[in-house]
Each structure stands twice: as structure tokens, then as C-alpha cells.
Length: 182
Image (cartoon, one colour):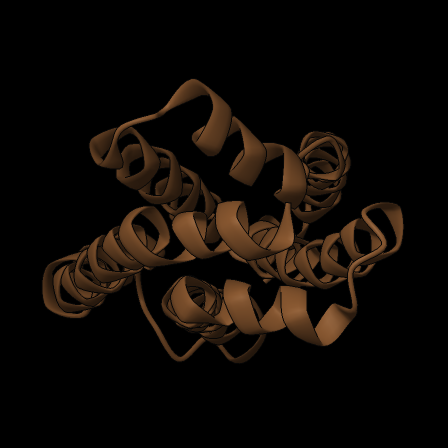
């Protein structure tokens, strides 16, 4: 047990540093900026899907380190809600109109983030079993089991959700946002 705890301080410091950097990056994203960018620059569907999928894959990579992914994903969900409110105030749009349009494609993206959050909880559980209760023999073996058995299905579900969400964003939400809100 002592052998495992001596690296916990360094690990925690690294986690906090990465979370701070990630939160600074996510604070710079803007919902209205991304939607107006799609409208003005005529970004294609594939680019929207790659942007959505790559951000979730980055969060999944953070989730493999345990608490990092949990805090980063929670921060992303909270920032998303905050940005919707800020955009509503800046563009002088009633929030219910903005949310109604964003929910068309946003539900799939939020569910994908919740699945990413569940991956993080699974990894935190593995760390807890290894560090605190000593229920597992080798953390590396438990990671291999998780990556082989549970992760592919969750990645597939995330892929499908983000694909459907990107289709809805490109073909439904953006035209509605362009025609009725901007």
C-alpha cells in the first residue's frame, strides 16, 4: 500500500495541472461562434463530425487516467450550460428558443458525454479497488480487461450518437438557427 501511495501526490499534481489547462481551453469555445462559423464558412458535415468526435476522444483519453476525465467531462458539461446562457444574453435571444434549436442535435452530444463520464467512473473504480481495497492484483491487467471488454461497445455507441448528432446539427439545427434566430 505505501508503495502505491508515494506516487499519488505526483499523480494528483499532474491531474490538477491537466484539468486547469483543459478548462482554460474549453472556456474559449463558444456555441454561437461555432454555429455562426458553420453558417458563414459553409463547413461540411464531415468536419463537424470530426470536431465533435475528436473532442470526445480526447476526453476518453483523459478518462483513462481516472479523475482527470471525470473533472474534465463535468467541466465540459457545466461550461456548455454556461455558454448557452451567455449566448442567450449576448444575442438577446430568449433562452428557450436557443435551447429548443440546440436540443435537436445537442441531446446526442450530451448523452455521448455522459457515456464518457461513465468510462471515467469505471476507471476511478479500478483505481479505488487497486489503491484502497487491494481487490485487484495488477492495475495493468484490469486496464487491459476494461479496454478489451467494455470500452469498444461504449466507443461504438459514442460514434453512433455523434454521427447522428452531427447529421442533425448540419442538416436541421444550423438551417433553423440561420433562418429564425440569427
